[in-house]
Length: 503
Image (tube, rainbow, N blue to C red; front, side, top):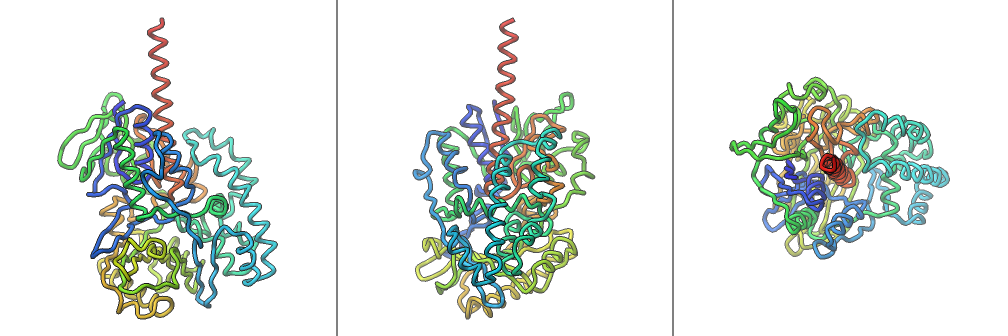
């Protein structure tokens, strides 16, 4: 079967590799000049900056891909564990060094609030139960409502109607510790006070399997997957932006895609790794999608966006870890501003990324490579980023300088930044959302955009906006789901043809 994949993010690459390994002929069409989607790599003045995802969990999903193709991960990319996973810093000066060492976790909990030790142990046990049930579902499609009905008893038992914060807060009383164990949904575009408690499984995932780093940066993992795909016969074309998924008027099936330069690529199946909302709203005429019409797509809730500053310093800040979570003065109030009120707050909580703590090759000798990320409202907010970007950048740099990185302004020797306009205009994300459809209970599993279109039988979706959701494990699992669905469909057709021949 000839299959086209739109976009080369981790979901698209995973689907493409698995489909090529099944024996299909797969072509990836990528809009930008490099593969990776949100995992784009910027190189500037001798510094290397990973554009997007930098936290690798569930490493077996990567190893499975290479094993499927008869290859070894280590022959393509080196993946190493990180410790600590994160330093979580609070404005009172306290720091939680978060890793998988249970005794280390308990010792720090006692230092923060001795009364929360027993509560944490109960939380961790409950998280194990969520993980056991939740991870069974991560690579299973939810294309029928009956699929959802089957798991409702488990969802009720696991308190999935509660938010992650609500789930954590019933076990832990110290406000700082509540933040330590509930912030994870922010890594996949969710509000801890709105995202279903199923996402508490991220804590267990990290405790069991660690947090990892691809030497050379996340872009090295992208390159490894692209090389694997090409080594098994796949084709990738860069700077090939798709303008239309061409639908057959008689069959309502996709015949292929047309690019912005007018070239037509025929396909028997199409996999979109582009933003789900963008795909429906801009690549397919509404008359072909009565179930996924404009009204339905536009009324969904979308994740926050991001403001990210990539910068290099001519000084090394050795006191800073690879991953730092910098909690601001407000937690729930700030999240309300971002997700509900959709206003640009004057304060912020930040993710500070210093990969040169682990891998000095990403910067010139004696220098550090960084990015700092601030969650902000998507473009549904009344914010003019053409004028707001510079003051917001200055406020973040000043904050870092005053609290964590002395004399930072004097030592920045290269930088650039992105904001919600980049997510909309360059990454084709609806409303400039950084993580597509928001991960809330009413937009999870069957309620999330399906991995195969209900309107177009041979159009599939892999990536953050479809099931199971954002984050490296989520998008790679979506690619596996799509490959399995297409493989199953192909097997069914082959059996049908054989039975006809037999008659």
